[in-house]
Length: 254
Image 1: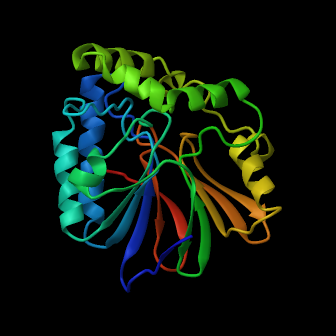
Image 2: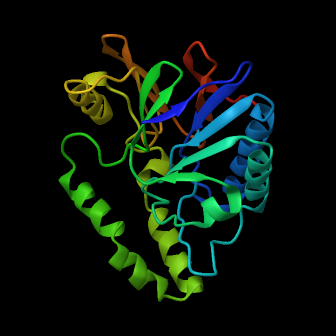
């Protein structure tokens, strides 16, 4: 369990699912600029920022090559790190091929699976949220396949002009970016809600915080435990903030 003690007048922020690079360069660039405005706004009181996956719609690090673009975002993230803000990054299903670029160049602490945190007196289970819960065996198999070192090694032999183009094309086929399959019917039908309830049978957490779902959610799990979802930066422009008293869902309005 990783401990974080909030300093006076500081806050901790959580966001996810920007999917930068999709569905088009124009729309992605506009969302990138809006996200940077938010990062600039929270800079003065942020002690730490958690990025809970799918910051990019596709990401692959060659030995000496990374995907083109995102210069403004990288500059802002480097500025935040130099300012003394802790940056935590959880890989998502779209940017699971993150290696060491974020650590070396931007000071990120990178996590490839959900992790326990203790923020002040609260126990938290934090991650992207993909592949958890019951069912979806096909996706869970694909997750293991795509995160294998063998596949990454094979992909690295493809010329970047071709490899990045293929990866970006396949990522854009994800229907979630077009707004399909993003519906909340009931908490009992939410896979991550079921996952949280199962975990609580053996270990207690005050909060489960995930992304991936593309819906800002705050669901009561009982016994003073909650499941929170950050939503996304495609349609909701939502995030979670901890101010020393409570964890709250917010929307960036600018």
